[in-house]
Image (cartoon, rainbow, N blue to C red; front, top):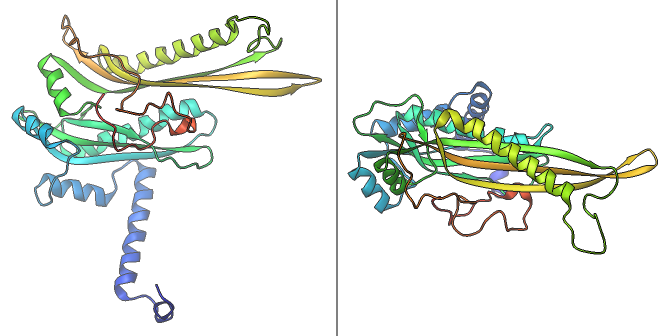
Length: 311
């Protein structure tokens, strides 16, 4: 806006646009607080389902053709987000953030009358805001021919191609489960990281700490996965350890915080059905760069990457 425009003031159209933006922002904030879908989003989804607006999908043309040939009808591209502040636990908050976003994604899928959401990707904005993080999900809501809308739509990280292959093998992706655990180790004697300076030897205290944290995170994952199926298709997992030195009277003591988080896609297979031999456990949901090998801040492990693909 130039100086003349500033002196002249805002036009009626500009004032109307600002009023509409303020209304949308207020409605979004209210929807977050009350657990409902924003009105504009609900209207868009309703018009898409009724054919008054074009549908969008994250699937490739080949996947769309395959989906149609197997009775999968794309309804709309949907998304959900949660920006979570960590009041006391980054580790547990990480699980809570994804769970909140997943619930909101399922709410949009129900509003579409969908049976499933395919090609779900987990992303975050690499923006450093104190003690908080963005959790965002995108996917394509689909309807299976001959089935009524679902009150509990399937949330699957697999694209249409893998989804159809799994269904043909009597294996159904059922959702996403998250496990997380953290634990402190107080090194009173100072031997945890440096048991010896003269020869190679395992730091058994830290090895034990890692073992405990990983086992408890996986146990937590199994607890959250159990109601959703009888197997795990794939997972993302990452770990971190911090060394902190604290004063205890006249003595400085090192403490170690270890945390482990694992995200898995759950499946439900017919009893006695063998999983296809090409279904394997993996350490990343994306093609290319792995968050396990990077040097970026740990909370950016899911940084947006346009090349990410199937499990």
